[in-house]
Length: 201
Image (cartoon, rainbow, N blue to C red; front, side, top):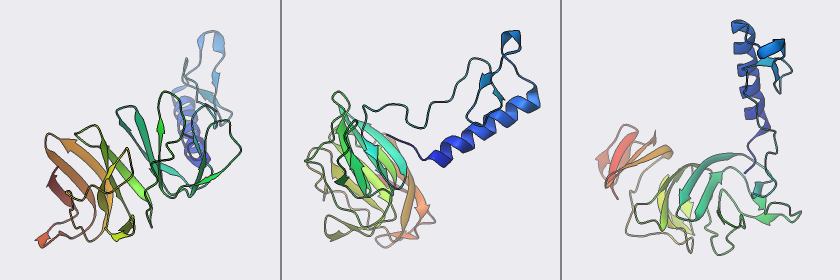
C-alpha cells in the first residue's frame, strides 16, 4: 500500500537531521544516502515512495490504518479510489478496502460504504471481522457514528456490536474481551465518556 509522499519526506528529513547532529557516517566515510540528500544512519536505507508494485494502491487521499485479519489485509484512510498492484484501472472504494495477503488481489466482495474517513482498525477476536474507527456517521446506509464492526468476508455490519458513540474514534486496541477506543466523543448510549471508552467485544 502506497504511503503519502509527505510522510516519507518528513521521515527522511528527520533521519538526515539526526545523522548530521550525531556526525554518523558509514565505514570508510561513505554515508548512506537518504531521500533528503544528506548522510543517514549507517546500514539504514529508506524505502522508495513506491516500494512494491505487487500490493494494491490507494490512488488518492491517504492510508491511515492497516489491520491483518487471517489471510486478509484491511486498509483504511481518506482515499476514494484504489487499484490492484500493476493495474492501471481505478476502482471506486471510499475509505476502506481489503485484499488477500497471498495473492495481493483486492477482495471485490468486500465493499462496505462509509461517508467519512477511516482512521483506526483493529482485527476482531473471531478472525473474521474488523473494528473500524473514524469520522464517519453512516455505514452501509445506516446511521453509525465513529465505531463499527465489519465482516471481512462480506463487508456487512456486525449488528451485535453497537457502541452508539457520538463522535470520532482515532485509535483502537483489543485486550482480552475488551475493545478500547480513544477519540473525540462524549458518550456511548447514555454513558458519559471523556474520549476514552472500553467496550465488550
